[in-house]
Length: 350
Image 1 (cartoon, one colour):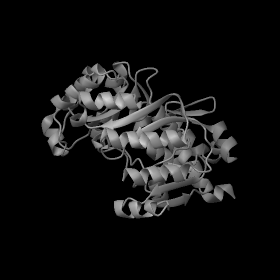
Image 2 (spheres, helix red, strand yellow):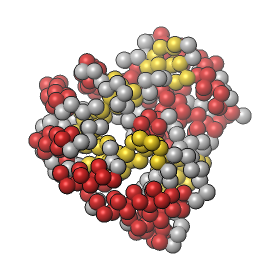
Image 3 (cartoon, one colour):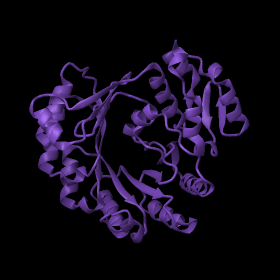
Image 4 (spheres, one colour):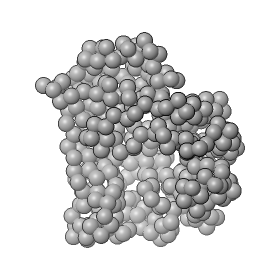
C-alpha cells in the first residue's frame, strides 16, 4: 500500500504548482499503526516532490495504544509536531460501547507520554450525546478532557454533528433535522464548559487555546486546495474540481500499480461552489462575508436571501456586523439548517 501511495504522490505532483505545503495530515483509519519505516518512506516521497513551508504543521492521528516512547521518538525525528488522539470519553463502559480498545486510563497515559516526549501540540477528541447519558456524565467527560492540558479539543455529537463529507451531502440535498431539546442542551454544555476554560471555538466542533488553532482544519474550512492520498482520500483544487479515490484497496492498488489514478472526479457547478462557501464559512467564528461572496461568485446573497437573513436576525440566530453574518450562541445549534436556507440554485447564476 505504501508503494502505491508513493506512486500516487509522484503522479499528482507532476505539473502542479509547487507552492510550499503548509500542512500534512496523516489520518483516515489508524495511521499510528504504520511502522516507522513505512511512515519514513511516505515522508521521503513527499520531500522528494514537494517543498514544505517553514514550520509546517504535520499531524498524525494516533490511538492511545500506539503512543509509546519508541514511536514518539521516531515520529518526532520525522518531523511530526502535532498529534490527534481519539479519546472520546472518560467512561470505560462508553468506550466499550464504541468498540474502542483503550480505556480512559490509557488515554490519560498516552497524552502525558506525548507531552513528556516533547510533542506539546496535541488535540483530543470528545464525543457526547450518547443515548441514555445525562449532564453529569458529560460534566465528568469535560473535566477529564480539560485535566489533560491540551491546546486543542474537537467535540462531536452523535446527534447534531453533520456529515463531514460536504460534497456528498450537498449533492443529495439532504436537509438535516433540527436538534432536539436534549441534544441542544448537551451542545451548549460543551460549548459553555470549554469557553469558560479558556478555549475559543473557531469552527463549530473545534476549540483551541488562543494561537493554537489547527492550521490544517482552518485551511479546510477556508476551502484551500489540498491533495488526498490513499484509498477513499479526497482532494480539492481550491476552485471547482474535487476527487475521491476509490475506497476498495484492491482496486486502488491495481490502478496505481498500472500508473493510473484510482479517482472519481467531480466538477462543482456554480451553485455547488457557492453553497460550499456558505456552509463552511457560516460554521466559522469569522462568519460568512457577504462582500467576499459577491466578489468570488458575482452574486448578491444579501439581496437574494434578504428574507432569510432578516428572519434569522430577528430570531436571534445570527448577527450582522458590517458585511459579515455571524452565528450567535443559539444560532450555532442551527448552523446547517441556516446554511441550507441560504443555499443558491444554478438558476441564480443564469
